[in-house]
Image (cartoon, rainbow, N blue to C red):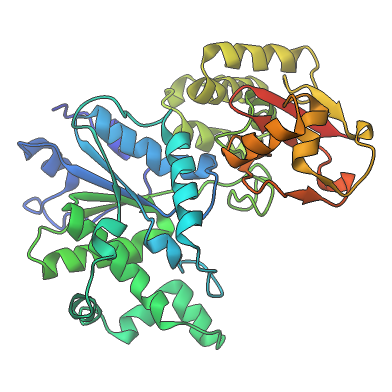
Amino acid sequence: MTQDFAWLRRGVVEIFPQPVDEDSESLEKCLLSTKQPLRVKLGIDATGANIHLGHSIPVRKLRAFQDAGHTAVLIIGDFTARIGDPTGKSEVRRQLTEADVAQNAQTYLDQVRPILDFDTPGRLEVRYNSEWLSGLDLGKILELLSTMTVGQMLAKEGFAERYRKENPIFIHEFLYPLMQGFDSVAVEADVELGGTDQKFNIAVGRDLQRHFNQKPQFGMLLPILIGTDGVQKMSKSLGNYIGLSEHPGQKYQKLQGVPDHLLEEYFEFLTDLPLDKLPENPRDRQTLLAWELVRQYHGETAADEAKEAAQSGGKEGAVPEFSLAAVPQFPTKLAYILNATGLCKSTGEGKRKIQEGGVRLDGDRITDVDTTFASLAELQGKVLQVGKNKFVRLVS
């Protein structure tokens, strides 16, 4: 085992607990002394269909642990997603159906496949927390609830704010941190990864492991990525995101617009390139960042093509355009648009592709064959995709 822990600390905000003296255990000491691979946990709740670059940060750290010889335990929160993590939410989240969660979970796995090592034996476990959570009886639930007080729960940032504003907090939401913590017990995690907003939930996992006579896990907190607007955290709802499933040309174009003051953070959090060897000129840095990230997810050929298209003046990289003027009237169904664009040979094929989950609009998978758009404005500028390699940008 290497003693160079640069890979461990890169892009990390905090590892806890920190040693209080020379005799205290640290994660580095644990890595050096262990005689077997550590079990490194990352939980992903399948509450949406798509992952953006911000979500990739803990997944990339999970890969770093794999490369150092440890076992990545990727937990798909198919049970917890039906509640939804209340962290940072000012109101109760909509509860999802089992069908919603199952579809989202498969999409997540498809999108993290370019990051994680799925092939080396012993390097990855993909687990679904319904394995252990759906079978909990009332006695076990009461045992979990007895490990925390209402005061401890209300100390959690989101709950405290909602309580102060007299916004409703439902009892089932109190269960979420306990269920996430019980995940750590179920998989016997040695390390749990999460964003800086997950410290409370990870700490609950440590407490539950003690309760069930396990060695408490280390927590590793990773940064929340600022979006392309340079101000707010990356979020699809804010429109400042870069999706992992976006077309290479579209991704390249967005990355070339990352503000100068964020470039070093993007390199540190999203790449393995040495930070002391980056180009000095911000424009050269943007070009390198765009090329490197497209290469990571789509390969060198796609990265070269996206770069060439951008340098030759392509407005949106290598995405061909389709004029919606060819659509005679609105409202119109998506299946008809798929036929009109030439992405599908017929409206019937369009419906089949939608049912199979092969159609995306701006990275969002669409599976309802009756999806209808009321006006051209709803589609203006969006990228319509069928499969992995067929794209058009919809324009007026």
